Length: 439
Image 1 (cartoon, rainbow, N blue to C red):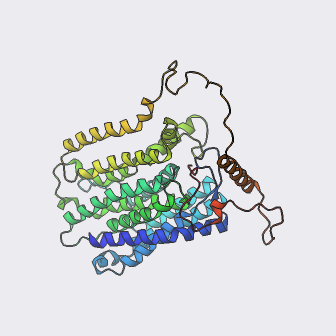
Image 2: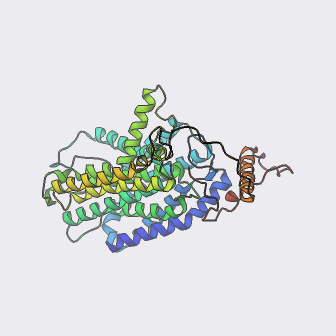
Image 3: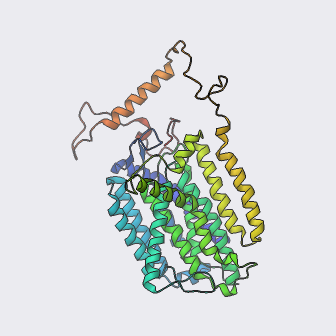
């Protein structure tokens, strides 16, 4: 356990230190998220945070290869090479998309390629974790593996809409996944606790934790597609490895249902992203649009519409992920009945937190509370203050900077060029003086 925790901290530290470098690269290469109607943030924000997370994962893998404790894992390097190669492909694909806005078909082809590369190196589904029942032929399993990985990448990408949301969800879910994989390895292989699934999920949690200080509201950088696709691929790889690494005949379980955990747990970790993606696809296809057509109807948009603040919405979604992941992991130690009772109580608490703002809304005709009772009473307009004037000037400056055309390559800026706003002029700053950075 200590070796895994050490590697988690190394990945977190490496990601934290590399994130300002990734932010500088984003500013240099023009990978900046402009303010769009479907977004929540109010100022242009650099992306490419996935570059730092990719670097943190690779640093962790290199350090892990030097630990004698993990010699058995690195004795068979093909799966590690497959994961590293696939991670590099999706990160490069995400960087290209963050800079040039690739079309959805190009991204889908790249995702399939990355998943196929990883599966061809042995990271693929082989059988259901139920008495070793084989699902199908090698080709069927290869295709199913590619499908699972592509779905996971897109699910995380769909939910990446608020500061710190995707990184926090995967960090929380990954922590539960780590505990389960470690416990399962201990029961299956007494005396040898080394496991590739446990290793990569520990590194993934570390990368997410290291990125969160830069990404939590108010975010100084977004992970972009380079990050969302990367962490989706790695969590999918961990789930796939868990289904094939354990001989369930030697695992002591109290009931038959926990035998499904290698499948249930990855679904629990990605439950919110999968739910969000499924609802989005049904909603868009049902209205005659492309499944990849953007809108403002994601789960996080609905949380904001209920009246939650940016941070509160993110934290409540953290609670939901911790609830379902914790319930899945608890099946290792507790009976199914006890877990379901605890899950039911937790769902009631989470629902109360989610729907809390509705209690503060008034019914029509209630003049004593805010609500749709009627138009506001007219009154004298407030006198403009110096702070308000400064804020309006800053807003005008941002809009002028965002609307100004980019100079030709190699050309010096003319006298009328608009300098970038202060929020983007200091790449290595870790705090944002402007509180209105909600996406």
